[in-house]
Length: 262
Ligand SMILES: [Fe+2]
Ligand SMILES: [Fe+2]
View 1 (cartoon, rainbow, N blue to C red):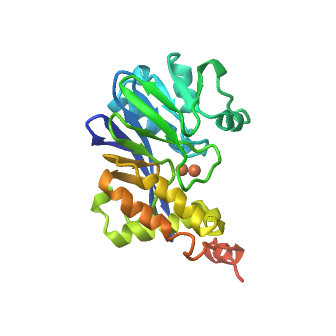
View 2: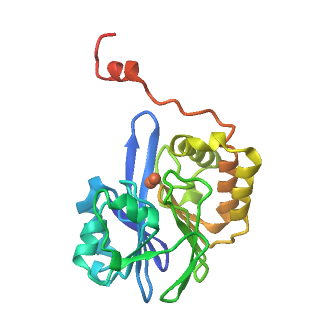
View 3: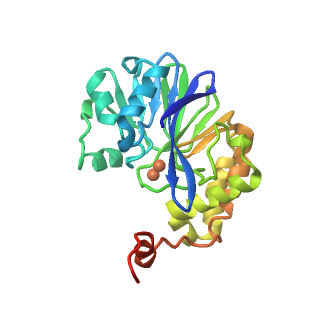
């Protein structure tokens, strides 16, 4: 079920939960940043398109949106992208050269409505000064998060996602163990390359985020978190390089699940 909740006076979360049998639950989030130039951050999962649009309409008239910030092109982030662009000719998509390239293989973007913003670059969206940043952990090379220095909102894309026993609306309701184990496990699944990065290099990428002092931390796959939790969440990621590698279920397990004789 897709639903909405408010994470800050100017931020609504549109969320659904994916249950992964044997592993836990994970949020799939998009965000509406209200303001003079309303922004939709990601557009839900392809499978949830109808529910997503219904829930989006409950927090904003999609005709009022002016930008979609597309964090990356995975199926859990691009669900309603084409529909929203078709229905609202004032809407522009903020992405990167690589994001456009990947989408050109499925659903090409109208280039006159694309805005390229690379990590390190700042744009003004209404009253917001938004700087694109590369999250320390990602699963797609076009991934771009942002820091909105006007409101103190930090958006991390898939980074900080967590597989959880259940998904609350506020990450501060999670116990320290739930958060840490959930984040470490998710990162070993979603970004297995972290195991192979030189320890100092990965630590430095986490350190670059420690200097941010956000009021709110948003992830595509974690309930909204108050800014003071950023240090704890970076601490979780610091444990990923030496965590146990994820080994996916194999055919023998699938046969067992399907009741096939060995
Ligand atoms: Fe992803
Ligand atoms: Fe994702």
